[in-house]
Length: 243
Image (cartoon, rainbow, N blue to C red; front, side, top):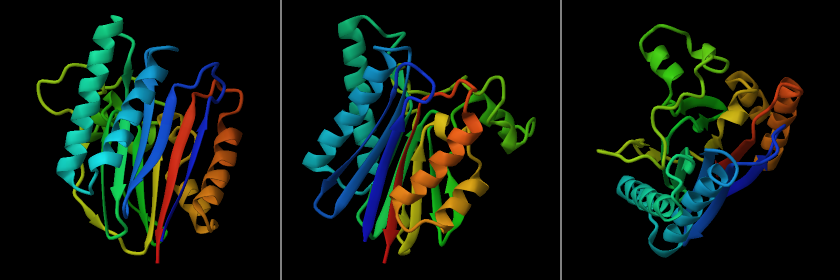
């Protein structure tokens, strides 16, 4: 049985540039989350355009496969570049992206930028996407520790985003994973994961009976940790795949 909940909040900012949505085609589901970059009227438009493009395409021809993930990301990138050109706003309309596909038997995801997907199995964190950012690169080089990413001075310096010209694919498609019946997945923007560590995510998950309850518990932690600190927009999609 698959259940999900979506949360998006402007935080302590005037505008919300995050956008998230879900769609279904037969037994298959698609979850999309994006964090727009470039200021009001640019970032929010980019995140909405990319998300809506993928969900519309999924409703018509979607399937759970790595090739389809690549195809729909390429399509949404093409549409975003076309809209940038139409408006003359190539410096403003950019976005991160996370996409999750599942049919209850298998699941697969892809991402670009620093919006993340966390995969929990049996209450334990099994995997998370790696940010396309300067701090994540420094972790890979052994220059900083993983936990230093959250408040690193270069945390917002992204190396890959939607809305810039690509010579080759810049997104990362992960290998498919078989559903175990005890799976929980969290798609979230950096404004969300910045204020809650993985241990707190796990603790909230163990006490929650639904995706809505999981998000509610995590949001309380986020607002407690980030209050008065110029909190960015924060958004998340929580998905349970249970027997």
